[in-house]
Image (cartoon, rainbow, N blue to C red):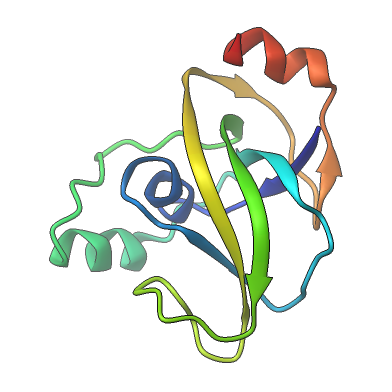
Length: 124
């Protein structure tokens, strides 16, 4: 399965707060299930931003792990989503499914592969 590293709290927002796009400077032809990986850094200003808009971001966010899956259905260079960032590609995401338990994992830049059996073990 393909995976993508997304900084916290944005990964949390995708899986728990209705964030339906992922903003990237590059487009992709990939469509289908995507494992959500979180790196080791947390953007504290983004946590404050989300809380200011009423999102109950937990005090402790998981880092350094696979935390769920989403489906990539397309992308657009402009979106009307509240989550969009002008000038970036917004990958369109649906069907967020957080894992009950994170899977410790090392991320990589760009799309990277995770063995299917690792993700299937927690999504079955």
